[in-house]
Image 1 (cartoon, rainbow, N blue to C red):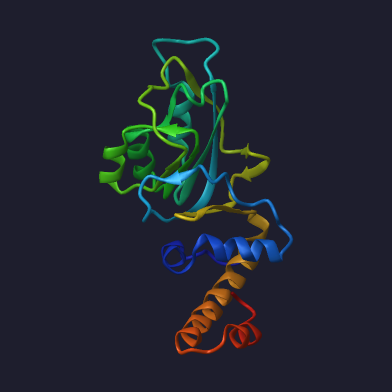
Image 2: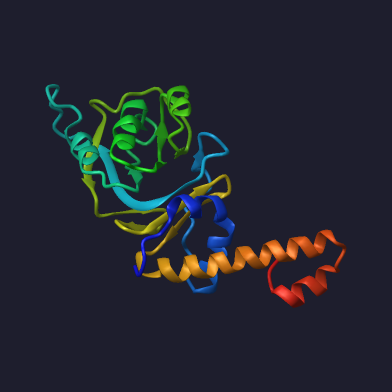
Length: 221
């Protein structure tokens, strides 16, 4: 990337549909995670760099060290990360992929949020923390003895979409968009331009301009 992004600023001016539109224009058609991944709070917005984590069924359970992989993954979270978790189907409905203490550890390391293609727990506590978490829903199951992280910091594949460490992740009420690392600068530049055009188009529509005239002028809708 050419310049460091002002993630706080971008979280206020961008939204997932405009990023999705730009990726479409650049020929990247598969870039949105499944629609059943929803924010715990509809006002949550998250933007940061992907830190993939894969959770799998425990093969050799050690009661003295039940969270070995997860603890290691948590201790290596970089600043400005968005943890993106894929959960193996064998435990997806049988273990919470994320909760209060994992959120606390991630926040302390400067993470910006978590996207789980699985279920979470400790919902009230996470909402009070204000840590942006997105998931498929909620289960009270502890992951202890059921699952553990068997890989992190590399890549995961969710519904055919590859998420690599360092890709840009943006999530809001409309969905979660993955921007490949090599396209971040182009996508952000074009997205900000489109946001400006949409703002101008909206102003003219409010003034009664015809939809056709507005489209012809700004080429956005």
